[in-house]
Amino acid sequence: MDACRAEFRRRCYECVAVVSVLLSALPAAAQTSTPTVSPTLAAQNPPQVRLIEWNLPAQGDSTPGAIIVDTMGDDTNRLWFVTRAAQPNLYRVEFPRSLMKGDAKWTSWRLNAIITGGLRKVRASRDRRSIFIRTISSTSGEAVEQVNTDPTKCQTTVYQDSISTGFDVSDVAVDDMNNVFTTHSPSLDPSQSFVQRVTPGATSATVTRWSISGSGAGLCGDVAMPADSSSNSPCISGIAVNPSNRNLIYFSEPTTNTIAELNIGSNQATVRRWSLTDLTAACVPSATILCDRIFGPRQLLIDRRQKVWVVTGNGDLISLQPSTNKMTIHELPDNVLADPFSLAPDDDVVGYTSSSANKVGMLLPKGPTHVIKPTDPTPVNMLPVVNFTATTSGSVCNSNFVSPVGKTVNGMVTKKDDGTFIEALINTGFDDNGKQSDSTNPLGITPVKSKAQGTFFFAVGNNTSVNPLIDRVGFARLPIREKIKFPRDDDDENDGSDKTPSWHDWHGHPDNGDDDDDGIDNAHDSQSAQERNAQQNDTSVPDGTLAGGASKDYTMVTTSTSLAIEALTFADDPLAQIEIRILNSLGVVVAKSLPTPGLAAVEVLLPAPDTYTCRIINYGANPIVQTPNLFVREPWIP
Image 1 (cartoon, rainbow, N blue to C red):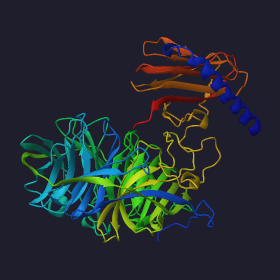
Image 2 (image 1 turned 45 degrees about the vertical axis):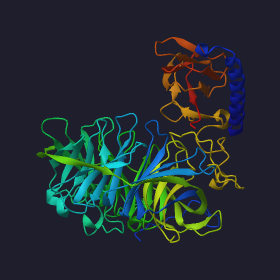
Image 3 (image 1 turned 90 degrees about the vertical axis):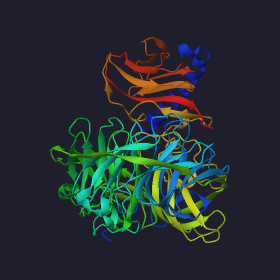
Image 4 (image 1 turned 90 degrees about the horizontal axis):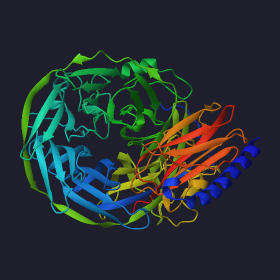
């Protein structure tokens, strides 16, 4: 049976090729507490992971920490990070499309700070030339610092907190109106905790605060609670704005061991909380899940499906779907010894850094879901509105180029009841010049949206290089060996390397018709363009039963750069009569498939920017199970 299906699928792709040729002639419009878990790979053949690292000259600074990639527009995945200690800088790194094929350009701005927390780019303006950073100012304590990244200027603006003292450095959240949110516990006193919104102006900032007394928001690590010891204190306390509703702010509360939601959408703000202590009680131990006490929520981020993810001091990744109160627990392989610093949700996977274990890792989550009822919404008092004076001054800016350094390090794949963990041990192995890796203490991590899932930029917190002193950031390509729902195209699977065997060969991927493991079948994968999955679920598995005479619609969105729309489906019955129609937003059919038993395929070349409907119709009397593959082909981004 499997052989028959394979032969049928091969013929499907042959038919698609013929159909594509026919359609191409038509006009476009018509077309320790660690569980005992055995790695999934044999001990004699542990996985290897390829890294790329860049050594930037230290400029009186050290310890690269928070890190982001802005993918919202014109900057095409530039990397931003801040150093945490000595004389911190903000860095921007611009890479060639193939990471090993050229030098990266770095630019730096000296900050008026002695330590830094999180950072974010502004979201509303198209040029997005401002970065906001949570800092401890070098002059008088806690501050929010804004860097103008206009290449013709070299300056920063400090919005100084006149009353808050202490050593907490939370993350930063920015809404679509450029309001900047942080959390604070002045003098490290949880009884004084508040959420703060800074609305920047030319000469001052309006500051609004909501009291959340007793929460410890803004604190992280052992400054938050003695049991949550961390070699990276202060680590980053989490805060994030719901991307679909700017009135909902989520943040970590380490003192009460909760995840909180602040609703500022009415005259009376309210807060509700989900208890990690209650989640611990709901956990059911298994052979690979210990259900250790969950405590110490740290960095918190929201994925594009509005699921909240938080990393904890005792080595867990926790998810929360606020609309349903469903939560999940995922214990890192090193558990409490991991001392995780940061996390990076990316559709099907969640990246993380196990700082004390010197690991950059990735979770493919699964396992049981627990419904944890939140507290009822309770009123929150607004503190008196204050103004911060904006102090703008010149900075010290530098720029230069740096070459990539490829490395091969040891990997580890651990399958547990709560998910698959794929990790790179960044302090093992050798670089391509035979030098042993000296990278340790990874801190910030962020997904690389221009490449496949499983690729991340990360900050190397420490290294042993002393001549010359360097700051270091890295890129990791972690192998995904399981089916994922939202794959991204990535035809540069070797990242520009010409080594033999290729980096990709070390992934150990199965012979599944997808040679580069990016979720795009070889039949549709082009080296000269990028394919974007158009269907908002898995495009390579059966999509349910389609009754006789029935149809099903899918949405396909094109832009001014789109090269083609491609749609293919085949039925479990090779004699089924099915058809694909492509309709524009006015409901006009711009292309339809030719009659072919058992399958249908259609292509529209150079489609106009629009929201199209792909309609799959079953003309037969009997129900079928059909498997759609829907793509929008885009040019490579230079």
